Length: 221
Image (cartoon, rainbow, N blue to C red; front, side):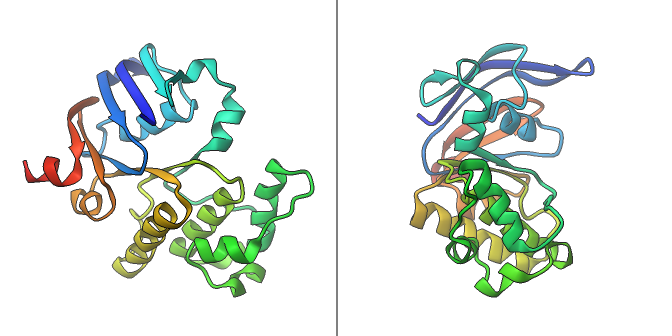
């Protein structure tokens, strides 16, 4: 199993965010789906050790994440936030920066990474600040892929996009999983998006899991 969370509880500013949350997340494309405020984004932060639970356990490939080096974990398990945050300069400079975190030489197959992220190689020289939100999301994906992660954690990656840009990002996500074998954990409030992308779904409400299983079985039920 890729991740397992067992009886996780977490308070933030005195408010119960996760309340006895338990779930399994296998290899492949999984989705955490539920309404706003159900704790989905908090679960992603636990998987990447940007937060630790007050009680309960979180494991990654059978290891308690608290026993793992946080920086090493975050290079293998990459969290992409809901709002894209790029550095000033060109798209290529953004990708080279990420590559430099992995390798001091900062070398990266920029063309290959852009193609994997669903962008034309001509984007390499473009000013990152002048891109659309959907294009920025795909540059974020290319930058994450420069670190050669095994897992991508995606927090509502299409929430601010129109239908055309959403479809492009979804096609990119599906291609990353099939072509590169990257496991993906997708947070969304959109059950239809979970149906399109995920093979495993965890449904959440009020900080708890209210159901998990193979997508076709869980959504049919």
